[in-house]
Length: 329
Image 1: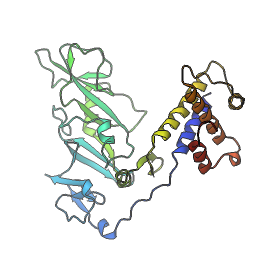
Image 2: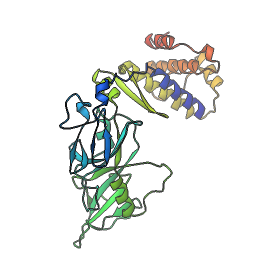
Image 3: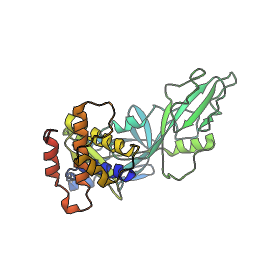
Image 4: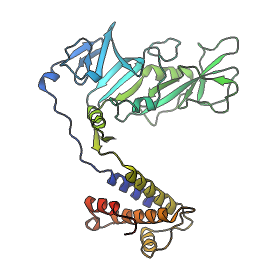
């Protein structure tokens, strides 16, 4: 039944269809505003250096240069720019306190939601979180590593926890410093997890990624939703935001898939269609009759849209028309 769940998930993406928005035109004179700072050469649109003419780059992507270090100020933190990839639209940065081999906490705690909450950097990135915890006694956690330079003789032991901001089960003897979270780039999903604090330190010094998208920023500012995809080259879809009805539709589609795939009986797609067309009840548990009607109807629409014969599938306009009509039809 996994195939049915997968197909209904595909249908959800189908409902989210929208025209691919086009990147806004870049004036030729913008492209000529290049600059450099230290090892970072050819800094260009959308980025600009502070002090350059306002006609250069985009003000939302202003960087500064200090002692040959290219600096990004992001979410109240200070970050050194390690590289800019204009093809993938990614910028790699490292916290100024963590860039060198010094015993420091981040200048500012940062989490995934900090990144996703910033309109300027809505693209897809693959980062992992690292949490810092201060304990009064040793802890037994395979993903947490003692930080020698921060631990003291009086019993204060600092740990860096990989992929976790909280070490569960240690609440009574551990606390979390104010600057207790950092991000690190995940370049290789097959890479081995850190086995020592030295590995953690190298990851911290390597920094993390931000993915800039002017198109997404402008999309969101226009009151729409931006969906970002990352195939061979990043692209985005700008669409109208879901209203409450759209949200309910998605919830019930997922609900229908989960209920059917989790049933005690093994159904084929044809068997599911047969049951629904005969008006047989789905095992939805304790839900209102109206909710059951909606779930049944949405499953029927989903099955119609994933027919093997593509020519028999409804058009998008027809799907919208069916979804807009009452559940009694």
